[in-house]
Every structure is written in structure tokens, then in C-alpha cells.
Length: 136
View 1 (cartoon, one colour):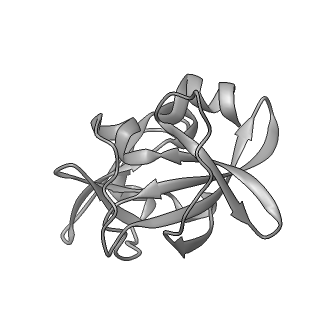
View 2 (cartoon, helix red, strand yellow):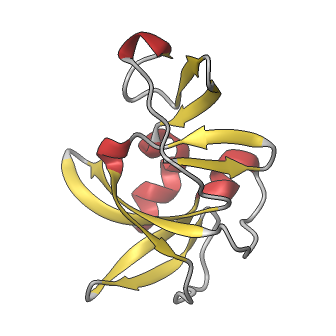
């Protein structure tokens, strides 16, 4: 799933994406620290919501037409955890052959390069770091 953060083009491996939903209101939790943004009511659950734009570019996401929430399953302490992430300008799915991706699963970033362009594939657990441990 491809999205923009600041001037960079990023992606999340589809094995980590459950679904993508439009940005709706969410419950803000005070006090909290970005990239944790609050809780999202989704499918009768309150998911921790993280601002991926802040985690990657140091700037809070802006509410715009392309802003979406990506619902994702990640590993937390060896177990599956479901989280939501705010991304700006979510646009499309990009496919890369294994030979077009450098780095290892679990790295903060892997690079996908092809004749179609380049993007940074985000390691969610690394990108969210201590915020994930504290709020998820």
C-alpha cells in the first residue's frame, strides 16, 4: 500500500494490511504522545491509532482527501496485535519482485526499486517503536 509522508513515498507490505478505511473521527486520549493519536472505533473494537506521518516525517498528518486509516496486524511481544495507522495520500498498491527489494523483513525500512520507481517499505514495529510498546 503506497502513501506519502512529507515529501517521501512509502509503502506498507500488504501482508501487514488488513483493510484501508476512510478517515473518520476518533477518540483522542489525553495525555498521550505522538505518534499515538488516540483510539479508533472499528468493528466493535477500540484500536490504538498511530500517526504514521509523524513517525516517519516528524509532522502530524493533515486531514485531506487522501487521508486514510490502515488497519494492520503486527507482532507485539511475539503475539498478533491489531492497530490502526493514519496515512496521508494513500494511493495504490505497488508490486515488486523479491529481487527488486533490498533489506530484510523487520528492518526499519526496505527499499523497493523498479523501472516504475522507488519507495521505502516501512517496518511498522520499528517505525512506531516505543509508542507501540506503550499504547498498543
